[in-house]
Structures are given as structure tokens and as C-alpha cells.
Amino acid sequence: MQRSDKPLTLRVFSRNKRQGKKLAVVTAYDLTSALIVSAGGADAILVGDSLGMVILGHENTLPVTMDDMVHHCRAVVRAKPRIPVIADLPYGSFHVSPEDTVRNALRLVKEAGVNAVKVEGGRHRLEVIEALLKAEIPVMGHLGLTPQSVNRLGGYRVQGRGKKAAARMVDEARLLADTGCFSLVLECVPSDLATEISQSIKIPTIGIGAGAGCDGQVLVFHDMLGLFDGLSPKFVKQYANLGEQACQSIATFVDEVRQGVFPGPEHGYETDSAESSSPKDDGSGYLAGVENGKA
Ligand code: KIV
Image 1 (cartoon, rainbow, N blue to C red):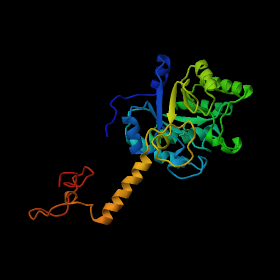
Image 2: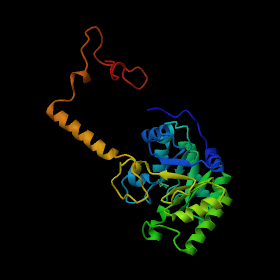
Image 3: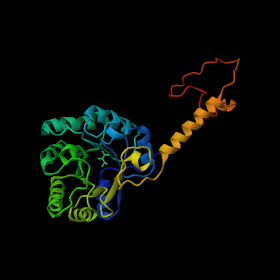
Image 4: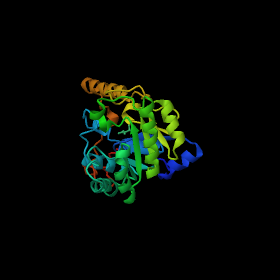
């Protein structure tokens, strides 16, 4: 797998907004997904708390802990993706106090090495966002359907419908931009409202279920690649069906093992009486002589 050699920083967000160039963000949760997202040319990686569902099997994002986020962010950063890595602050990590929020976010920066954090919510989050910015931690905002509010919202539904709700969201978007967020996720928002917000604030909006008028788009890795069988909202475009391909590959392997077709002679080793029969560790992480085609 090739790594992108074009290093990008968070400045790509303001630069692309200025130049009218759309931003493409994809989630990743481990080394392999981070390498794939980076090699695919995305502008940034979001280590979303969606990992609670697509990786950890929870029903929603609420149980995700700081330890879960640190663990997965570390794996993503180990891929050295050369594009900015943004981490979700999970539910409960920014609800107690600004001090507690900064302490939690610092773990993501210092222990995992992420470049920024994402905070769900509007006017009620301004105080913690200010505290994060004072601690030199860049913040991405998130309005519209904020999955961490699922209990208050009574489910996952489009937000900002109706004049009052729309005006409130425009107002909150301006507040987040004025407070210093470097970008803003708009999730499940009517397209015309998302366009209005995108045109009325200086920071780029990153839409998910918010139409083409946003300054960029984000999708969940497992959803867009057809790797997750759970709830698939209308806004998800599936670019591949890797889940089905993976199942078919496993089924073929199982069949070949049972039929004695795999392994073939090309997958085994020959004895060499002159040398030790046990492979030596060459220190590279591979056992000497066991790589594909070198036996
Ligand atoms: O957790 C997540 O993956 C997200 C994106 C869907 C925006 O918040």
C-alpha cells in the first residue's frame, strides 16, 4: 500500500475554503484504515467515536471512553498518514468542566499524537472550546444531528427543519466560527440550510447528510466501503462492497482447506540440510526467509 507523500496540516481547511476547493474527510480507526484513507488522497482523517459502533459493537456512541479513543488514535497516528488526524472527544469527556475537557483532550494530543479534536454541540460548548483553544488544541465543531445527544433527541433524525430551528443553527454556527473552531461538521441538516451556513461563515463546513453546498464531505470508512451491516442512512454512498467480497474470500478459503486445495506446494518450504531449519529473526519484524517468494 502506498503512502501519500504530500504532507498536509490543518491549514488545508482554511486554504481550501479560500480557494473554493472541496475537502474530503474519511474516518479511520486503526493502522490499516489510516493507510488506506491516506493513500486514497483524503485531506484529513477523523477518528470518530463512530468506532463505538463499527469497531466495538456498541448500539450507539455513548459508551465510548477516553481510553478507547486514545487506543485507536495511537494506531491511526502510527500509520504516519501525512494528513491531519482529528479525534472525537467522546461522550462524557467534555461535559464535566473546562479543566476536565482540556485534561482529556491533552491525552489525545500527548499520548496519541492527534492534531485536533472534534466537539459535538453548539452554544453550550463555547466555554470548553475556548479552554481547548487556550491549551493550543484546535477544535472542529459539530452541529445538526449530534449522535451523542441521541437520548435528548429521541433518535437519529434530520435537524434544523423549520424556521426557528434553522435560525438557531445559523446562529450557533456563527458562534462556533467566531469562537475559533477551524471547521464545522454539519450532520443530517437540510441541504439549503447547510448551504446558507456554509456561505455565512468563514470556516469550512464538512457535511454528512447535509447536501452539496458544504465546503467538504465526510463519510464513515466502514459505511462507504460496505463493511458494516448496521443502520445505513440515506446519505451514505457505498463506493464498494468489501464486506461481501471478504465473506466470499473467507468461504473460498474454508472450502479450499476442506478440499485440500490450500496450501499448495508454492505456499510451503523445502528442507535445506546445510542450514538451520528454524527461520531467524532479522530484526525487521519479519522472520528471515519467510516472506512471500523468498523461501
Ligand atoms: O463519529 C463519527 O464518525 C463522526 C462523523 C460521522 C462526522 O462524527
